[in-house]
Figure 1 (tube, rainbow, N blue to C red):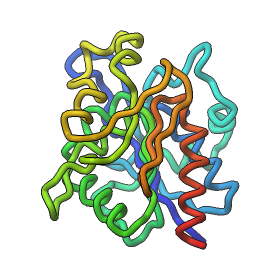
Figure 2 (figure 1 turned 135 degrees about the vertical axis):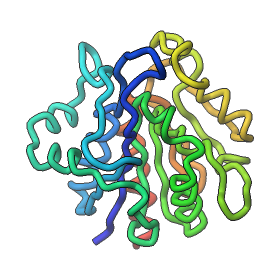
Figure 3 (figure 1 turned 90 degrees about the vertical axis):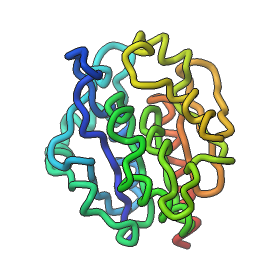
Figure 4 (figure 1 turned 60 degrees about the vertical axis):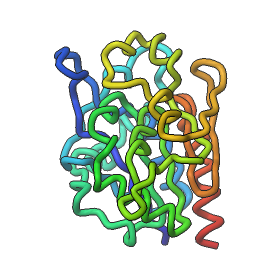
Amino acid sequence: MSQVLVILTSYGQLGSTGQATGVGLQTFASPYYALKEAGVEVAVASPLGGDPPVDPLSFGEGVETVALRRLNEDVDARALLRASLPLRNAATTDYDGLFFAGGHGGMWDFPDDPVIGGLIAAALNAGKPVAAVCHGVAALCGVDPVSGRPLVEGRKVTALTNQEEAALERDALVPFLLQERLMKLGAEFEEAAEFTSHVVVHGSLITGQNMRSADEASRAFLTALASRCA
């Protein structure tokens, strides 16, 4: 049986504002159920381990999804979330793929983390699929610890756009604009209309523009996983 590591943020505050943030539950629920239904074993990790904070943008009119409603009623899945593994204890060799969930918290604890950079580089170098959605793409802002080169250099990617961040009125609160940072690191950034599903696949790297891309990104990730494990 294939096993995938889904990685969530541990960061729960928008900088020094006192405003809550965390993981976008939609971007966890979509891959979690897609993988489970395909017979893939799912492990969950976060930089600090334990119960991750939840972004308030996970709730409210217009953002609820079928997978999110299912998660809210799933005792086992919620228990798995609350007991996320400390990321330092994870080894890429144990998993057939990595999936980084979204949520604004990832803008603080995903970029430049050497553990995350090492996991991603090892997975991509081994041809294992790596997916990231929305602010989860901030995990790709690090470097390959062996080559010292940016993880996204020369790769086609997408992520929450500058315009989408401004529409959420958080562009002045985040430590940097994700689209801008990725482009500075040498990525070929592709975007679609605001808040529409858009996924970019470049080799074994799969990125989704926003939370509404979670379902499509999950399907693309499963396709890549099945192809590698065939």
